[in-house]
Length: 234
Image (cartoon, rainbow, N blue to C red; front, side):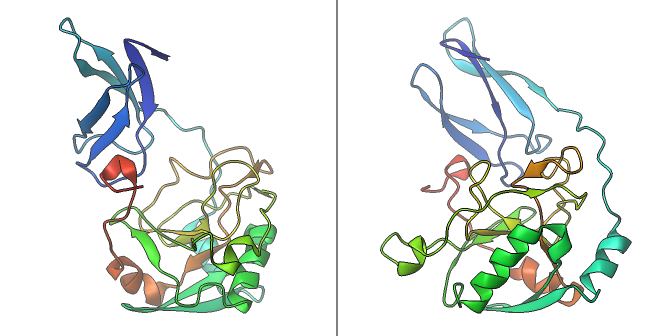
């Protein structure tokens, strides 16, 4: 729903209690403080009051379709199976070990391991690390030779791997856009990400998971990030 006097938007991933900055259909820039009860994925309906000021009309929480997720025990076993590949990232907070499971997302896993072998992530910055949110890295400047080295990937198919705490996947801007930007979940986002019928092509297909011994280090990596909706520069 969107017209000059009303519109609806989905709450993005951000810290509880954040203020969202967005533009209304009439061009007004709004700064909307979020109550702690509002969650990412909620639908906020905005409208104008009698004085013409924008206000929150109501918030809708979508009930996600039932998805048959693999259990934590299954995922842990697969992370220690013969097909799993263990990689190490050295950060300023210490090493983070990740188990890559190719059967979860064959195309994505192959690209990730290619990036590792090519040294793509060497001396690269983590540009977003939000508590109870996610870690993101893998973006380079357009003048960096790495920016044009890799083609966008076709999507993998959903196989029931939830976006649980510690799960690793690609960031994407729509179907067929995965390339080199990586997301690590610092909380459980299965109600927002990776949903859909088994076998459906999706960008939201995890390919690995942070190893148990590295979870504390993962959570220690924190920076404000640059999400515009959370007050960043973009």
